[in-house]
Amino acid sequence: MTTYGKRRERVLSLASGFDTVIVKDPKNLFYLTDFWGGGVGIVDRDSMLIITSVMEEQRATGSGKEVVVQGVKGAAATAQAVKKHTKGKVLTDAYEPNLKATFNASLFLDARRKKDAEEVSRIAEASKRIEQLYRLLETEIRPGRTEREIAGSIMRLATVEGLSPLAAEGSLSPIIIASGPNSAFPHAELTDRKVRAGDMIVADVFFRYRGYVSDCTRTYGVGRVSKDRKDGYAAVLEAQLQGLELTKNGAESRKVHEGVSAVLRNRGVGRYFTHGTGHGVGIDIHERPSVGASTGDVLSEGDVVTVEPGIYIPGQYGVRIEDTVALGKGTRNLYSYTKELLVL
Image 1 (cartoon, rainbow, N blue to C red):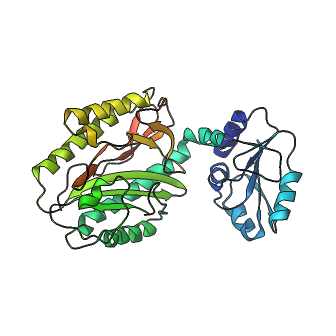
Image 2: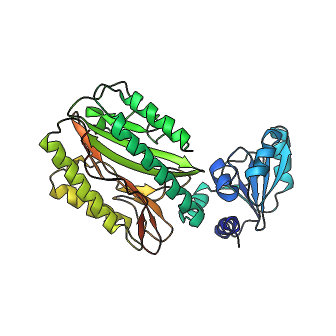
Image 3: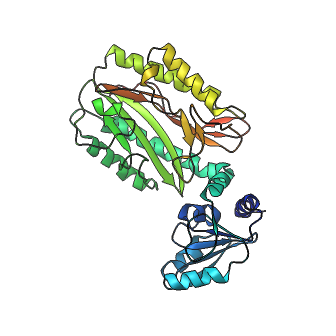
């Protein structure tokens, strides 16, 4: 069975008891077809029917895998075409006003959790290209430059590298370049603040490559960095390395988080760790599973997750170190870029 056939089979298996499965969310449609755009998909074991605007018909046909494309004009024609191809009990991932259907977006997130080889390959390639952006940051971060100017240089190279931006959840900015006291905000917005000597700079860079996201964070120092900030960095690095060691098949996500938190508590900075240890990545920047204090998730083969402890001292500085890792027979870190504190 093909890669896309297995994905359709997974969705249909989770939707057993339903006669028709309809996909409207562009991300779910992409997962099942490799076409990113507007339209409605009807899931079949042998192929996907995509009902889309005539404006998108050619692109859907060209990029879609194992698809039959029907171009229509207008919402009424779309609704009529969808109704024609549905029967019995209907399941959908988005509200459908013209059909009696059961809405269950969670089912599709469950299907997307276990990454196949093609998905891991794209996330790994995204990671490789993002590492080029961090190498550029080594020359872009310097006193007098604003956060926006630094981010602009990164965005330009990302475009050249074939990476697509997305907004961070909790922020309007396409990446996080947080300097000085701004680095104490886990989801900092880009500002016009100029980098100064003594700053810590949290650089959280996340992009899609061919539809799939990778997420990485490094923290830099500028000029002469104080001992307490170096100590804070060392504490986060120790915690992150502990998290990587604990992230493996069969591990309870909650216990991974507890292990990371214990390191930071022992270093005297535990109260400044204000978020979970990690999250799944894939088509979305935040997917299942969750790695945090209250999750019941158990890590398993096919999961791709981040390990990203941080500390945030209000009004002073923050430190975060993050890698994206893939769980197969073992645990594969998709990043090799240095985690040594670089003082620029």
